[in-house]
Length: 318
Image (spheres, rainbow, N blue to C red):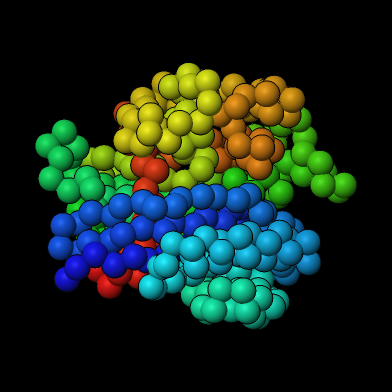
């Protein structure tokens, strides 16, 4: 089978991302042509209202228009659009589906948590296969805006579970005031409340996923990559430096403690933190830290390749 030019779109609770790539199933190589991300906060208020907000839909549709143009220009022959946590939860998801179909000509696949987990695992581990410095099985953890996927496996998925904790969901649930602003910084009681939610979710995940049996923790998505960039002391976000970085527990704790005690202005002044993550990164970091404490992981291997890459491989028929 020869390489195919494919486009993959991952629409999550906080961000929507595009990857246009040449995928060669014969060699296992995925060559990026365009990889971009927009913070659209599609999941704004979904945990509270059960509906996608009109302004969140419009932000998302604006990104879809931009992506449609990029896909046309690069000539992708297959397009896959996957929507995750926020749209699973929304009563008015048909409005979202119709808007995407009008703009991109494809129907978004609202995947289950288990399907999301399998795509994340494929995207994160396909290029790790055979590395002598990493023991298996892997525990792949994808910390999103509305949910977190935990997947254990070696060459394929052995067990997976999606749980309803994410950086946006936990921030809105525990840190947001009635006017939408976020407590800055969070109080000790608020941090403890977030920890209780994370612990309960990990208890739920552990009923089907053998978290403690994993030998290598692989962390995905913006919360994890941002923590890695901060831990590495970068002066700007650098995906090349972050991809496959190995961040020890002590550095994850140091970064998390700093985020939980910093103000909005202090976080916003750090160029490693995307403006769309300034208010939610502390909750995302706390998910990662609590998971490492739960599993005893000495380090996290950070991957810039995740569900988006898994969607691309699926589009290529691999």
